[in-house]
Image 1 (spheres, rainbow, N blue to C red):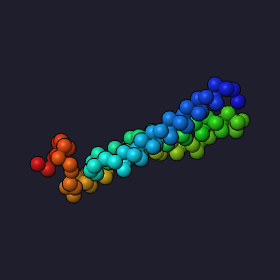
Image 2: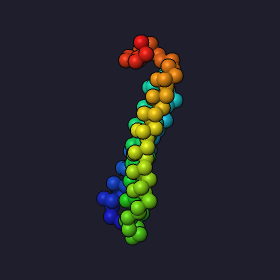
Image 3: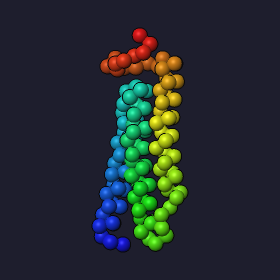
Image 4: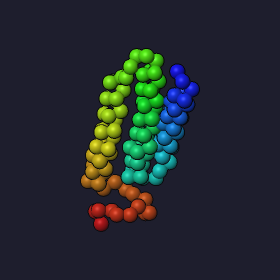
Length: 109
């Protein structure tokens, strides 16, 4: 495996791990449901996408060729994460979940 490819794989894995870590910290630290929803839907999705892309590059460089399974996993993740976040947000709006005072744009006012 060429050195440049190893470097690209390492960068993808590290960046993916950092995005996943930031998403997990955001899920833990943000104050209300609506702000907490951003952690797993944005940062963690990019983090898992980076790790899967790095894995796909690594195993395709080992002579096994490209993996359709990893492409499908990444596609499924990028499609389902925003849809599930949208459904969760709509359910939270219907339930009128409490928000912090700094949150703007409350549709039930």
